[in-house]
Length: 324
Image 1: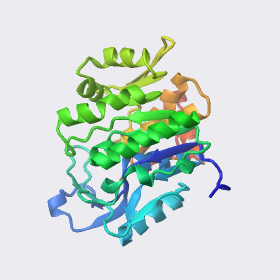
Image 2: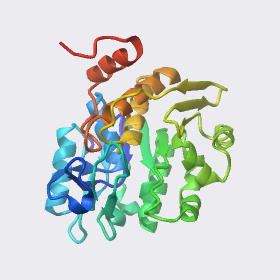
Image 3: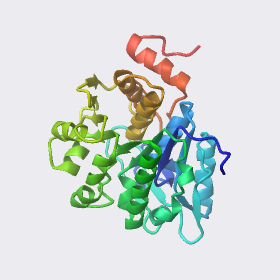
């Protein structure tokens, strides 16, 4: 595999088969489902690939039809899956959910004992990160199992050795564990990241401090940028050189809010990879998130670079929203 082209970005984590109920129908009443893929890190990889980047996803899938379906969808988006492991003894995880624009969404995870939960350090190969400029991970992976937490630590170690920037999104999922467990396992990883994208409520949960105070403390450590996703859906980028940049959300019709955070991450990281300033990165992140929440599934609305630029021009400059 030495002749493989080095990726710009590597993500690692859980990818599941998503079964999405017909729009507007509660999960317990739904009879028709649409198949797709869900997973924080695979969503970011797909977003980066659609935006024109060489993105590689690392993870483990079952040697089952669900795993084949996940791989097929990721390959179709242009994601490099050359280093994905298959587990003949454990299944691919499954996520069932419904979709409502104006009421609570029911999300059911079937991930206990999955191939992803059996991720371990021996599944992380150093060559998978060779040449990568960015490693993006989330707090979900270390919360899947102790061995997955050890694999996350190895990823960070390899990134450090290779001079790869580490991007981290806590992605707190309370169905996985209680807040105290998240703080104990994921909280310390904040100090290992160079670039942090976190909800202000997540940062408060993980640190026990006010989000802005926690961000300031992280910026005195390793981090060069902390992006806070506010509860009002605006975002703030704080930088180690004292910069502070604000971005309101773009108001759009809401079809399905799930996946907005991963889309925001993909938009921001794409801009970072292209060397754009923080203010532009925030705008692109908000734009990509706004496109995703207008469509079903976590990934349907992820745009190409050209579509992102057209949409951002329409959002900011009042350009023609119809591409003729």
